[in-house]
Image (cartoon, rainbow over all chains, first blue to last red; front, side, top):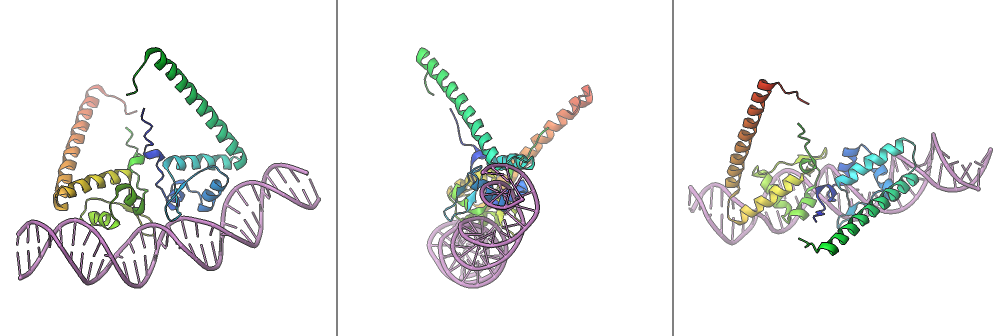
Length: 108
Length: 108
DNA sequence: AAACCACGTTAGATTATCTTACAGGTTTAT
DNA sequence: ATAAACCTGTAAGATAATCTAACGTGGTTT
């Protein structure tokens, strides 16, 4: 069951590159973090590191902002989506568990 | 025919992160560039930017170095491999071309 | 012995990023 | 309609990250 945390999710991109990839200003990128829309990691020295997923997310955020949606609202939407995804995940695991109980499947 | 230049090949990683990902020293990473084994891009200001593919390649290089193979040799190997890959690619395209000529397939 | 290899290390300069703060035009709430 | 909150620009000063160039060195190779 390989959730490898693939390249797409590895936090390796500095803010300057994210700026270039997204067209956003560094100010904006940091602000969206302040509003809890995005969660970069940090280097030992304190520099932010983003993933490609983060970059994609930032572009979605930028679109919504352009549509006049506030960070506040965007955050709510994101939480809603996450909740739904977690539920789906749960259901999936539940069913898998039932199957394993019934038929005793091995884990590799 | 989507050669998207996917995430894996996008040059977005700074040398410090590459150092952390590979365990190599920055000196080594720059040296392998000097020996033409690796080809980072640059930011406007002159900082090197690597891709995940580059990171993988660097780890392969590191292994060969450990086995006592010289950069000189490694470079030759790499050129050999590339040549072969280009040939394969060519053949593939040739055959595709033949098929298109015979059966007139559309391109989308 | 001379030259080359694969680095380590240092120095100094430059680029990149960080936080904090103030400012200001817009939108939202009271 | 005033106040408050929103979103962003900009500036200052500090720190982190990267750059090039150079010297040194133990271990091969020629």
